[in-house]
Image (cartoon, rainbow, N blue to C red; front, side, top):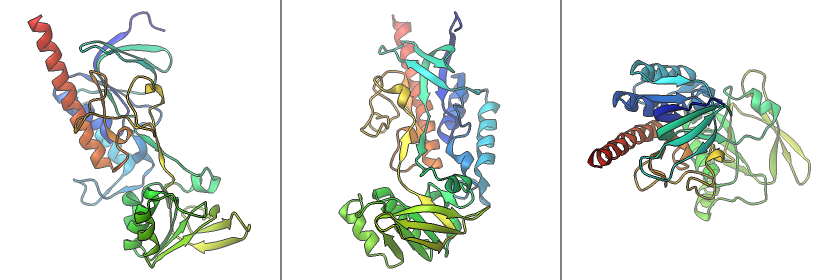
Length: 321
């Protein structure tokens, strides 16, 4: 490890829409932001083909292109974007204290403010055919990608509130939605279950799992298996949506930052402030409700503004002292 830790004014951990938007605002405020991209530069959007619902792109844009453009915009204002992953943190509990962050288990940083934008990782089933067709009809976000399957037959996997909500959303725009629930009942609330069962074009299958996603380049069908009888059945679909949950990327912050039972960072009121001074959280790492690129970008803006105000308060106190 380096003997002299690098001193950074504003460190941004993560490079999705939240991280890059925070960087844009922080750079324009002369906070000299440094962004560490993490293992997936650009975040979840780099696995998305078309993005049609982000304002300012009337003809849509593919996810990787959009993230490159966000990075370029952040860099235009002076953001230092680096490849690397935060592997350990030791946050100060004092106002004005320096936060210690280790990058790639070897490089030590001291940051006056830290903006956490590490996002959340969608849970997948782990089937080879499912992984092969991610971006080719397999998606973990019906609200993001459902539009592309308007009037078509699709399937969704999951039994919780998110799966129920996304199934009914898809049912409004798709011809037919086959919903696969692994157990003999849904985990969703009674109200959400009622919405599913009262929607005529949702075919609800209990005790049913995916045996294989069919198709070479794009999703063409699904082979399902009843986990009680072993009976298999194939259906023709063009889109498969996985709605079995997300895991926030917060493991290295456990024991230091307040989290809910699922591991999402808890922020104060309408702000991005965590329970520790000078540490802020934006994007999917603290948002399990919306999980959209535009809402992540909005909280990235908020985090940069919160960091700027925090630093101004610290400087004011130091001047008075």
